[in-house]
Length: 191
Image 1 (cartoon, rainbow, N blue to C red):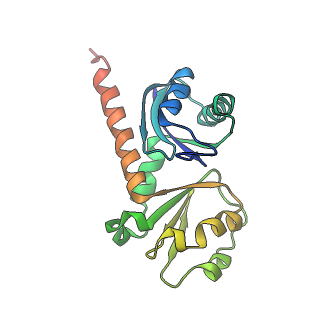
Image 2: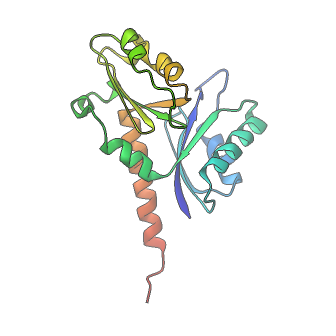
């Protein structure tokens, strides 16, 4: 079984596009996933699957949510190594002390037409950003709700992404490590 992290974009607590985490667990289990764990209401799950195709899992999960809940969220499925790499590469380690000001935009693909100077025009003087591989790091000391960068970055990069704050990224990374460690303990010892 492979451990995966599912990040769903556009999930709400109430109202339009509402998906209870119990419902997400049920959908994943209906797809054959095991050891499903969720973190907060914003669409984060860690699970194990026999599937070796993350893109296929993402498409299947989105389709099943649409069937059961009437909307089709963008779903990004990652292996734990991708989250671990994103954590290790954080270019703003001093921002980790206030985790709600540090955000990671996980991109679904590599941008091909980069013009990051456009983002410099919309950022506040206190804000910083950096693109490393498939992760757009964003530090917003005044709060992400007061920033134009999250919406602008996706348009400029031309690639869909889903944001998570530092605390959430670290928590789902830890959940994935725990799940993998528990799976390793269940494996029979080789002789």
